Image (cartoon, rainbow, N blue to C red; front, side):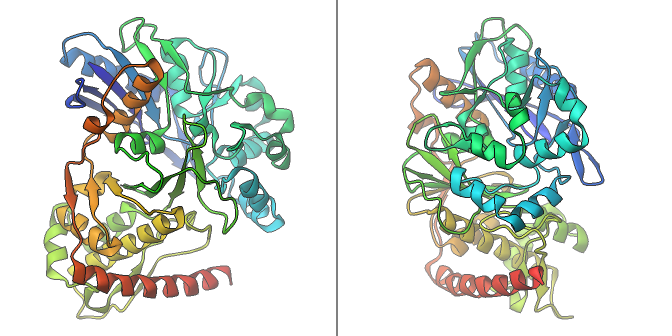
Length: 474
């Protein structure tokens, strides 16, 4: 049995697989997010307790020894710990917005662009650079008491194994890692005013760190590998490794990833380059704020249930009878494939004759256009895999294939946990057939005529978006 652990933002999961990648059991447990005044925090003890609980459950349900375990989890944020991996304060989530004024200032004075040109990382308020700078100004005693500023999976790895604090190149990619040398760029640390806190940055294990479990959740001595974090783990779990191939994660936020061997730090600063265990290979990532949260807002506002979406999509034609949605509903604006903190959603073409189906279809089309924008900016030229909660809607997947104008390799199940196991197997030299493990559940082909219609619609979307960005800046 092989076990993958995926420590998500709101849900912690563990999945057991056999040697062919077949899921044998999955256990999950929700964890709380505490939101107050722009702060988004998590209780590390609750998160770690959930990890142990799901591991106890999944290993109890499947007989046989655990060959190895792979660990992944949410990226970014700041998880301050002492020397034993215990929390110094609550974890600041990647969703946290307290440092937005710092990011605004760095956008205005050129620091933001300089960091991108050095590391390929377009900072946002919930990434470690701004959060550490904010804590240094507002909670210096917390930083004084900390041994390391970790990422989520790193805290879990330290507690499960007793190893010292460490991270991997994927999590370290935002915003301090030089993607060419695969080491921290001290000039970036200096630009963010954090030179005196440089010692808090966890050592980078390259490739990912390994250790044996101490006996909590997993049998003592079980081999564990720490990473990569959830976005690159999903890419591995979906079989996205060849340059030009991509992955679209259709979740609360859209995440577009394209494998590449080329590092281009020119152009509009946005997204990031995620370093992988293979030197010279990166994932060009465009993790947008837009995603299923936009559709959720429309559904709740119109009183539509999720199980009604497929039927409503069938009732409205392509183009949604003239209704158009720019789906940028996030209070923090957008971060990929451009950074526009004040951008807001727009609904146009709505009349008394517009139906709920029109609103739902227009929203799904708008999300599809945003995904196409991200994938083009990330350099997609090859095959496209799709995973995430949005894949549960067959009608939306057909619409998305039409809007993107390409086949979708739909990969279902615990894709991140699957990728974590494949990464661990590579690290330990365990021969697992990645092609078998990452076979798609289905392939959704686009309709040629609808794809041609949506190509024109996408061009119109870009024009409306450009005008909206000008208004957001005025």
